[in-house]
Image 1 (cartoon, rainbow, N blue to C red):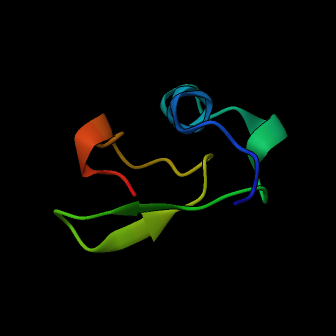
Image 2 (cartoon, rainbow, N blue to C red):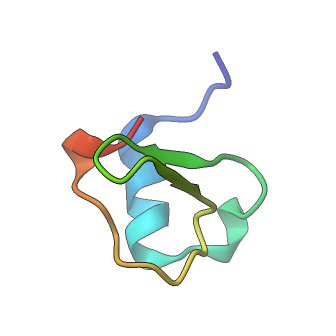
Length: 50
């Protein structure tokens, strides 16, 4: 466990919060990709993130 709250991570992903860059990656089940929080791609749905 890394101590990061999933809801906070999703907020960081949707707002592209640079403070979280390098702290976690988000894997998207539907597209089979992973991104950093600052990724310029469209934000996935919360339920598709792992």
